[in-house]
Every structure is written in structure tokens, then in C-alpha cells.
Length: 493
Image (cartoon, rainbow, N blue to C red):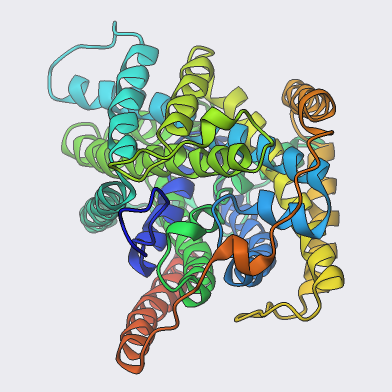
């Protein structure tokens, strides 16, 4: 594509697509609300985490098929626009924007909490500083980064992810001798909370996986998307499980049951849990550095980039005000949409509640994924002959299973967050009815919308396959380790 054209450019490869996706997912969920649930269910957390993986695999594969066939900016919005209609497309877009911006907003608050604990361990007291101030400053920095171009943002994202991995592995190795197998109590605790509370806990653990389709929202900026996007989705969901399971294993093995009440109510459960267990100092410092400057920053970055692409696509399509669809002539970024995401971030940060933000996010993303599954069924019916470079196994069955599962999960979600999601839905419908219903903008043909998708030459294809093989092999190894490590305490007891 000629760079002088005022369009988005394809600059992201498999490495960046995986980094963007993992970055969105592994962060505030794992290091705040997701892990606080260990204070309620103990070593049962692995069961919740594994089931969350199972109900995320099929939708990942379904999104892989849709993203390879329709590699556009905007993800679910574009799928719903063609597979269902514009009303449902708008609904998916609004909920996705709110949900992923909420992930980013929660992440900035999580960063602020771990950042303050880091300085406390270094002997500098900044606990008096409002976390919301730190969070807003961080959002402003990432707004500038995303404003200046997807290539810079993609490179920074890869750096954050690999820095996080390096810190995580170093922390794991350092903490292994301090793990107590007796803290696991086998695979279960003596008793569990009531079923309704269990479902609420499960929802917060599942939130550790939400955002698993982040890379598809940047389909218009991905090189060779027919290969890159399905592969990135398949790799990412298992890497998310592995990281989540490993960190949870260490928290269970390091903190005695007597301090579970500390974990259950902590804003920074890993740091607070270690301090309560008498492991302050270097373990907390290394952990906070990895979480704050690796895990948290890697989530904030795509938490701005991905929803900005939805806003851009919807504005370009007439579903939002046209000025939000402008592309910066120099940086080729949807700069107005990026600023809009920043404004929403500031509003959510002002609430100061990570748990409320988490509940809003998981409900809106569940709604978005349900619309995505319905869109998949619609696309299969309306465009049976559409070119599909990748096909999800038993995709129709998977769509129905996912739709029913997520509906059941929403029944037990936080009531105030459900009301918020309802208000978002009503506002979306009113906006569509008043401002966009009569515009009647005709759908472009698929070819016109996605443009020419370049097919790699043989040498490039071999390189793509080699890169994917490396990622796949590494993912299999890490996943096996993450599952196997839970068997060790049972064998040693």
C-alpha cells in the first residue's frame, strides 16, 4: 500500500498481533480481581481458570475464521454489520469500546497501586498520592504513543510483553524454593461458597481471558491477515491460560490460608499477599517491576489502540460522528478516535473502583462475543461462498454453545454492572434510531471493503510458517508446564 494514501497501513506481524492480544488480556484481570478470588476458593482457582480456557477456545477459533475472511478494522462491528444488521453491529461496537477501554482504565489503576507499593518497598512513601492521578498521567503518555503511529505502538507492545516475560521467569525461579506444597491442600478446599457466589467468582476469573480477540480489531493494519490473525488467536488463548495458571500457582503456594482474607480484599493481591506472608523486600520489588512496567503497560497500550479502531470504523461507516473517522496525514492513525478513547478512560478512572470497572467490562465483552457468534451464523448463511482462508472446526455448534454459556454466565453477574450494560444498550439504540437509522448507507462489497489482500511469496510463506511453528511449540511447552505444575503438590503430599 502506498504510504502517501491517507489510510491505515498493514504493519503488524504475528509477533505484534500476539503481543497486542496477550497485552490486553494479561494484566488487570490476573493481577487484581481475578487473583483476589484465591482468597475465596484457594487452590480451586485452577479449576475456574481451566474452565475459563475451555469456554474461550471455541470463540477464538470462530473469530479466527471471521478475521481471516474479513480482515478489517473494527472486528465484531464489521462481522455483525454483514452477518446480522446495523442495529446489532452498533450494539457490538458500543459494548466493545466500553469494555476494552474499561480494561485499560482498570489497568492504569492497577499500575498505580503496584507502582506505589514498589516505591514503598524502596523506602519512598507515595501512598498519599491518589491512584487516579497516576492513572491519568499514564493514559496521557499512551495517548501520545498511539497518536504517533501503529508501528511505534506495536514495537513498544512487543517490548513490554518480553520485559514482562523476563521478569516473570526471574520471579518464578527466585520464588520456587519458598513455595509450600502444604498450602495447596490437594486440588480442593474443605468447602466452597454458595453456587451464585461461585458463578460471580467464575465471571471475574473468566475476565482474565476477555479481550482474546483484540488482534482482529486491527485487521486492517495486519500483514498477511489470512494467516496471521487465526494463528495469533490460537496461540494467544493458551499463552493467557499458562501465564494465569502459573502466577496463581505461586500465589497459592506462597501465602498461608490464614492470610486469604488479605488477598480477597486487596487492590494489589500479589504484593499484599507476599507482604502478609513475610516475603517483603526483593520478591515484592521484582514482582511490582514486572507487573507495573511489563504486565500493566502491555495492557494499557492495546486498551487504547483496539477501541480506537472500532470508533474509527464506526465513524467511517456513519454509525458515529464523521469527525471520529479522520486519519492523521502524517502518522496514519485514527487520531481523533484515540483522543475519544482517552476521554472515556478519564471518566472511568474517576470512579476509582477496579471491581466495578471489571464487572462492566466482562458483561459488555460477553455481550459483544454473543453478537459475534450470532454474526458467524449469519455470515455462514448470507455468504456461503465467501472466501474463508481458515475454517473453525464445528463453528456452528461452537457458536451456539458459546452463546448459551455466556448467557448463563451473565445471569449471575454484578447487578449494578448489568444495569450499566443495559443503559449502554438503550443509549446505543436511541442514538441509532435518532441519528443513523435513516442514513441508509449501502454496504460495500467485501472486495471493496477489505481491499487487495496480498498473498505471500514462497519464501515469505516459509518464514511465516517457521515463525508460527516456533510460537506454537513454545506455547505447547508452557501450557504443559502450567498444567503439570499443579500435579506436583499432590505427588509430594
